[in-house]
Amino acid sequence: MNCSQIKCNRCCLTKKAQRDNTEPVQGEEGIGNATSEQGNPQQTPQTDSFKQCVLSWLFLWHLVWVSVTALRHLLFIGTLNPMLTLLAHGDTAQVSHYTNAFAYTQLCGILCAIWNGLIIDRYKGKLRAEGETEEEGSLRSVVLSLFLTALQCLLFSICATIPVLPLQYLTFVLQVVNRAFSFGGNAAFISIAFTVCHFGKLIGVVNAVVSAVLLLQFPCIILVNEVLNGDPLYINIALCILCLATFIHPAYVYIRWRRLANQRRSSAQPPPNDENAFSGDNEDQPQDAPGSS
Image 1 (cartoon, rainbow, N blue to C red):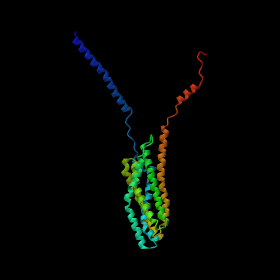
Image 2: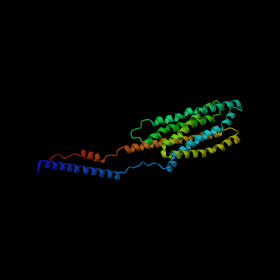
Image 3: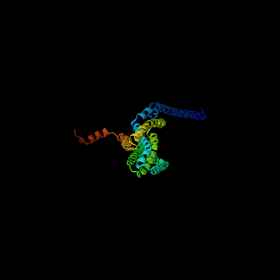
Image 4: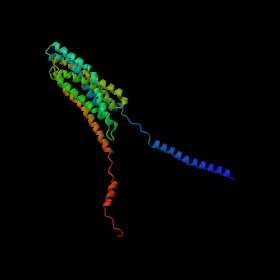
């Protein structure tokens, strides 16, 4: 056998050995990937169903928050003219002046519309704490917005209840600001707190429930005009008490956020290591001296 044949045989053996070494590795990788894919299948994130979203306390308290706020605004507009006539003692010039002032303040709603969104974006853009989930950050960002809207609604109702005519300028301002906050906060909260795929349906449910609640304005206006002789004082007092229910919603969102944060902290704490405890006990025990029997 000459040298060229020996070299050819060596080259063939080298290539065969390389092929034998690489093929099992590729096979093992394929098997490993198959087992990893079969053993640990990709888990798609589970989202709440539409029924679960509608029946959750988070959504039910939001319905109360939106319904009370909308009812307060429409009843104020419906009883505004009798209230101004009563406070102005029938002076049509003053009634016309305050009605025009109310109409002008409604134009300022365009300027107030962005404030609520700026508050939510500011708190949502804050750096999250270590380990804080997206749900915690979203709930944290809307707590202040919900609370401010409920506070504005209560202050607006109190000012509308006080029978002082010049004070109604402040009532008009609070009404415009609160209406802008409530309309923007409604859509913002649903988009943040619930699954995005249910946004349109949840908005539709909110509008349907609010429309049904607003039917109460007709018996209330009839009560003011025919029974109370145009004096909405008792209706305003009842609405002030009803506005206190709007504070339940931000309180519940805050409690839910704190509960999620506490659960995260408790799950992040490592369990006590029993082996270290046992090893510590063994170290504390005196050891026999070498050579002792």
